[in-house]
Image 1 (cartoon, helix red, strand yellow):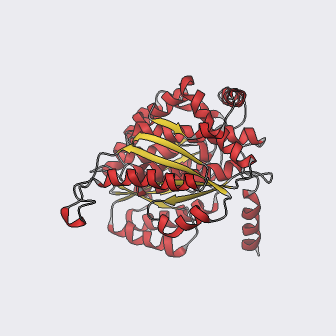
Image 2 (tube, rainbow, N blue to C red; image 1 turned 90 degrees about the vertical axis):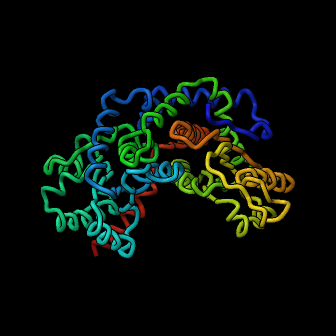
Image 3 (cartoon, rainbow, N blue to C red; image 1 turned 60 degrees about the horizontal axis):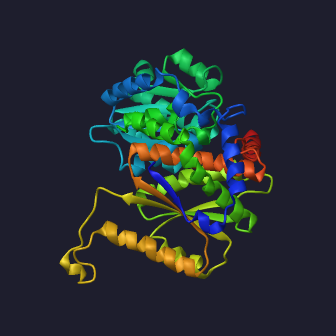
Length: 408
């Protein structure tokens, strides 16, 4: 396993609690409940899908130097998080850009110039095609593509990832003949990390999606790992019950910033209902220590910390002599590791609860394990809270208010 969970034992988790969490995990993996298809998906996805995605990705790479992924929430965050954590697209592969994750005219106007000055393809990810942000962006970008390439050529540059049977994007895909991959009906957006909506654009960027899925498959079937792995879910629940309201995700490498954003959606949308749930926040250290460090050390103790630590990074920089005797000759990664230990020691003195998740390396295999582990943690914690971690009824309220205003 590439992942190790630390500090949880300090919260005195009982053997009975572990057995309860393991039983919840086992029930989830039975896939008898709506939207639990993701639990076994790394092992059960159709055998031909991987080859089809890799072949289509190779074709797209030949057509463009920029791929614009249109989607919001789980339809793009997993892609963006993995690519950023791995340092961007691999050499010779298209740069991945993201649209349809907001409704800002200022943000989307820049894509006209991108399309005019580059070879561009689109990948639209939407189960229905009706999500407003994605629908707007797809319509606008597609019109600009028509201006440059014409309708027939544009259709060859669009990949749609949508529902297999229904929805306006499904209808358009069939009518226009877009290359298409299906979103499995029993997997929701924020649990879709190992579906084509995430894996196809990863493949275009040169990410080894076979290793990514292998990591998820290995951790999903390793019962020995989960004897310790469920302690993260139990710790989160115990801290919530003790009065903590906020979980602060922290990382000492800025390449993990979007992993933090992905966590915010996963945990916030899964657990924030029925007046329950932890509020997910994220901080990049040591940068944010210079803005939030004071609050963490001495402010209102309504939070606990979850620290992601990548133990072995290949890239490093040696500090030159000009930095002074205390620092000269050291590696930045070693100094960063001391920062992790130093901050944790200071926060321990302030009695701040901490959970540390160690990741051996930042690779496709390790990221596959990490994302699956976090999805299972979210689902198990939700079940411990007594809520459905797979729905989002509150989301419809603000959407309806926006529709009402547009209708006026």
